[in-house]
Length: 388
Image (cartoon, rainbow, N blue to C red):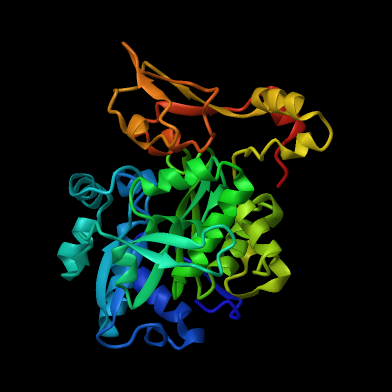
């Protein structure tokens, strides 16, 4: 990762066709000297994909296998040794990962190219003295073992952080349910955003390529709708690429908590701080792009109201998960992945103790059937209405 390099290459790409993507990426990497600038012969190169859950590629929840295969072939041409990996939501186990690899198309990429899928479930403790919140990190060993990390996020909205991009994709470096612990311990969106920045800075991906050919709008990162954006983006700086993505989908950078927190820590956070190369963003911007309202902490109200009143009002204003018993199949994914463990099975469907809900929306994020929706109270929408 080169934080001084603020270049972002923007490229039009209209189809998930491996050879087309490969050609476009080869051209897009030229300002950096090609993939060979990042990958040397014999290096172990981790493709850190987004494998949130076992969804098919057309459900636009995970990094598309055509993008992964194109990058794989570029790395192989540079004589790098590729391993594809991520820690999906939920327990970090072989049974879960096997299903995720198969359904997301990663198994197909491995079969077509002969590369390795990560099966190492180990964890390592890494000191992080420069971290703002996390002074020690628990990382998946597959992250620690990599000589080079190529970060391959999917362009999506997110119910908690508004957008998931290059910075947030590195949250998958944290293995299994330890991610739930981070959610539980950092319930304030500003604290959680700084945790994501701590992780991104500590893992330091060498190259970020964002899959925005078909993205997700609305209630992401798994329950939204697909939208054609026809875009691939490249940068050696994940903070810079997220700023460009925000501009592409016409969201003000300071409305995305990770970008706002990055700016407060001296990282790129404004459009005029980055150098855009390639296709002008204006040619690729959609006419409309739906992004979710997000909930900041009660601290804003605490400036004006007594603490106990602010807390009561905040509970009334906060969005909350709603579980549809007609759709729910009682698979238990939400129960296992809930950081505060406040979801229980009912005779039909499930129920959450909303008084103890921390609004991380892991339940909505990981529901395989979209049985969980986020209800945003009218008063909250009026007071904290969406500003793009």
